[in-house]
Amino acid sequence: MKSVDNNLQVIQSSGYQIVDYFVISPETWWDEYYAPLDKRIGNLRYKYNENEIAMEIFDYLQLEINLFRSPQFAGGRRISR
Image 1 (cartoon, rainbow, N blue to C red):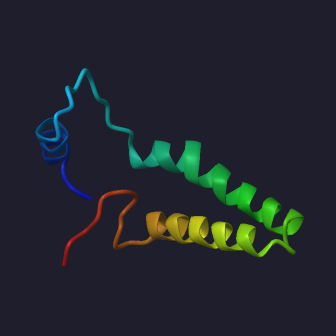
Image 2 (cartoon, rainbow, N blue to C red):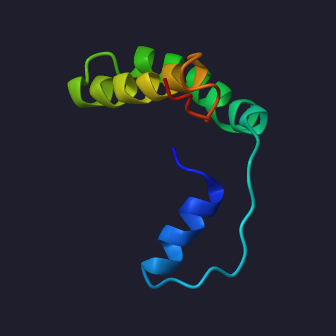
């Protein structure tokens, strides 16, 4: 993950005009997106347990949730070593 300034530069150098932007805190990402998604995946795994494609999608989503929670990723702020 790059800095906000770097991302804005990439967007502009790609020919897009930035009208406005905002930054969402890691806490908000967790509370409003990842925590509800984590709960929903559990329910959907039960409902679609015979659907191999659905299980692969749920596995991928769970990996993203686990990455967000990991100390190395620090809730959306990747820590370089």
